[in-house]
Image 1 (cartoon, rainbow, N blue to C red):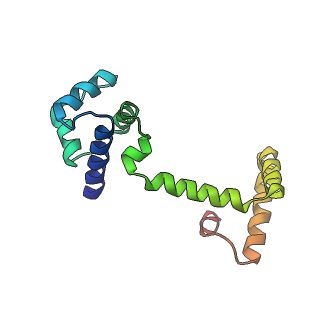
Image 2 (cartoon, rainbow, N blue to C red):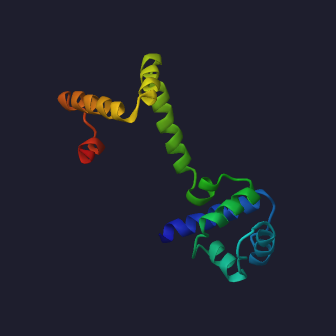
Image 3 (cartoon, rainbow, N blue to C red):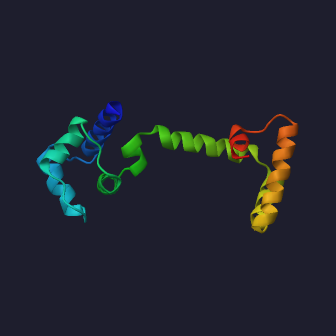
Length: 140
């Protein structure tokens, strides 16, 4: 957790630098509190963000991100999460053809009881072919 706090502090300082805001607690406290509708942050709280001693709550990260012009997930977690999501989405998009997409769309239009039947059929086929995912084994 300490590493995550230090990395957040570095991302915050980098974002401040990009928009020309000095990484000084008094400046950040004043500017942040002018934009945030919740309970104001203290000078000590901002200092803890900058030193990597704490990470702000989600609502404060959202406000910081909007103010500094960065994605909230990138400010909070870094570039790795969005990169992983894009890579997984790319794999999904490249691996599915027109016919599979058509089947997924039809599946989503089925009533819930029939979706359950279709799911059970797919799981049985996957199990018979040795490609049953671990999540399906746990769920059953």
